[in-house]
Image 1 (cartoon, rainbow, N blue to C red):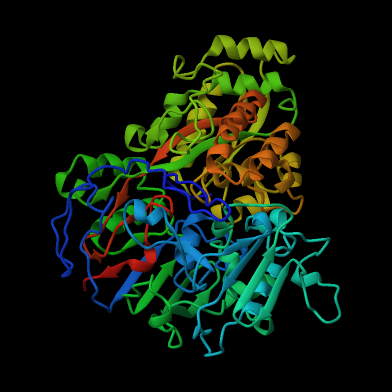
Image 2: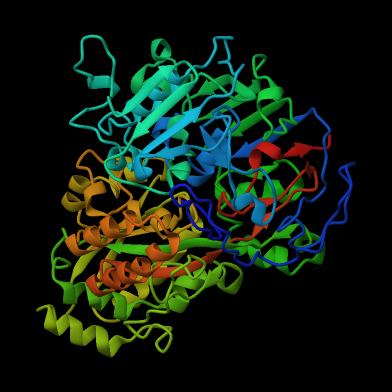
Length: 588
C-alpha cells in the first residue's frame, strides 16, 4: 500500500528492463562528499544522497501521530512500518538501498540471490546466506522463514498483513501455523525446506514477480518457540542490525544495536545510529514544529507536513531549502460502501462522485504541493495507465451538482440522504479532506456525519471490518493507497480483489466486490510478461470507476521536511516516497 515510481515485475526466467519514471526534480542538487556536509536545497534528497556519511553513533528520534498497525513483520501493512521494520527484520529480498532509479531494483537480502524459478514459474527456490543469526545468536534457518510465512496466513490472529501468500501458494486447506492440524507440525506442504539453507515455494499457478512477494516482511524469520501469536509484537526477535530495547504499548519503543548482526552478511544496511527512539500518539502539528526546531528527526508516517505547516515552510526560504517533494505512486481516495443503504444503489454512489468538490479535496492535501486532481484510481506512474475520466472531473473540478441531482433522482433519493463519513482522526489533512467532501455533498442534500478513528486500528477494527462499517453506517471511508511493488498488480490486487475481503477485519479493499474485476486480475496474473499484463490495469481501473465504489481524491505528492541533523538522506524510489530509514545517520 505504499510504493512509488513504477518498474516491471520479473518474468519467468528473464529479468526484464526497467521502466523508468521521473523523479521529483532536483536530481543535480545536493552534496556528494562523505563528511555529512552539504548545502541544503529543495529536493536535495530526491534522486541522490544528501549529506552522505559513513559516521556511526548517535540517536535518531522518530515520532508517530498514532500507532503502528503492528511492529510484528507478519501483521503490518502500513508502508512506513515496512520501511522501519528493516531495522530489525530481514526478508528474503528487498528494494535496493540506493537513491534514484536504482532503488526500484529488487535485490537479495536474507537470501544469497534472487529466486530461481522452475516448473514454468510455479516453483521458486531461495538459498539463505550463511552466518545469519537471531539476536540471541541462534542460527537462522529456512525453517524459520517457512514458519514466518505459515503464521502470517492466519488472518484471524494476524489481521493486518497482505494476503499474497494466501492467494498464491497452493494451500490445500492449510489454515496457518496457529491452527496447524498436523501432529508433527510439518506445516504447509507448499513450502519445502530440504535443508537449513534452502526454501522452496510451490504456487497454484505461475507468477513471474515472486521476488516481489519474497520482499514482504512476512518472510522475515520467526523462531517458533519464541512466537506468542498476537502478542509477538511485544518482543519481535530481531534478524537485523537492531533489536528492541524497550516497548511500552501505545506510548513508545526503542531499538538498540543487535550484537549478533554481522555486517558481512548484510551489504544493504548502513546501521549508522547507535540507538533509535520512537514516540507514539504525538500530535501531528507538534511533530511538524519539532522537526523544524530540531527536536525531532523523522515523522515516521512520512505523509508530509500538515497543510498549515506547508504554507509556513514554503514562504520561508530558510525552511523551504530543507524540503523534498517527490511524486508518489499513491492515490488518496474515498471508498463508497455498497453494503450501506442507499449506497447499495449505483446511482446513489454516482451522486457522491458527481457532487464531490475535487479541488477542495486536493486543497486539503496542500494543493499542487500535495499532488494533482485525479480522474480515476490508478496513478499515472503505473505502466499501463490510461487517462480515464468517466465523470468529467477535469471539467467540473468543484463538482457537478446538476449531474448529482439527476443521479439522486434516479436512485429514488431526490432530496438526498444521510450517511457517515469515516477518516483517520490523527491525520489533519485527512480530516480536512473529509470536511471538504462533507461540505460539497451537503449542497445536493447528502448529509455526511464525520466519524474519526485512529490510524493504528482503522483497518483492523473500523473501516476495514465489514460488520463494523455496515452496522455503523460508514457509507464513505477515506483511504490512501500506494503500490506494494511498482506495477499494476502491486497497486491493484489488494485494493480491488473481492476475495481479499475478510469478515475478521484488516481489509484494505473496503468496497470493491465485482467478479469481473476478480476475473481480470486472474487473467493478468497468469501472464509472465509485463507487457502482456499492462493492458489489464486500465481495464480494471475503468471498471472500478464504472461501479462507482471509489471516489479518487488526489494523485499524491508529499512535502517532507528534512531536519539539518540528519545525514545520508534520500528518498527510496522502491519504498514509495519514504526516506530510506535504515540508511539514515545523525550529526550530533
